[in-house]
Image 1: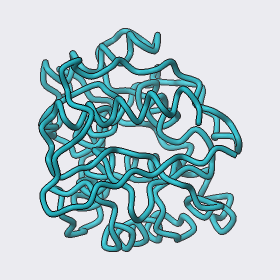
Image 2: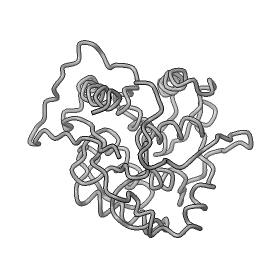
Image 3: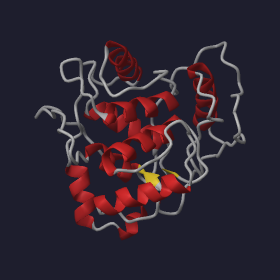
Image 4: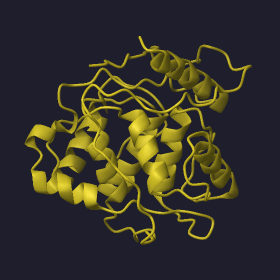
Length: 255
């Protein structure tokens, strides 16, 4: 097991304890299927269309509200950049979290949730094409997935639970069908960009012409290229109390 993965598991457990989220029992990023997002059945034109979409921009000057912000903060929580109660508005607290993340990974220091931040979050959660969240996974990122599916695709998922259950998989399938992605119910890196850039009835967030970042598809077998995220609070306990749920932790398979 890689040092990056081991450190990630410890950080995520500590993160949940720090945030006081009792429904989770350890955030883990999957044992992936052979083809997350079923890319083999995703038409090339759909792939190109999704990848060509501009990432939304949010800042103090363009604060939302948007579920995109809550989605991003939930994924950042799993990486150790904590917002205890993620919301839909870009507040000063959110700005501080984004700045901390961007500084840590030497991204543009503009205190904005923009393309480089979106891409880095995606690359850390989905280092290769096979990585995806699937049934049985738990974590803050799953809550973010549920929130964005509820808001943009009319799902009715329980956002108080961080469990990726059968209902979540079914809702992901609906979103994948709407986006034209090969339907498999596993939420991978293409579904990530698809749901973020899908606006539906929402007003699209500003995407400036200068908001350009080099973006490459994950390569099968590639490891995450980022440094370890900061450790959560030192006094956080290694375990997380659960109510009516079994503790579950899934290991990432490295190919």
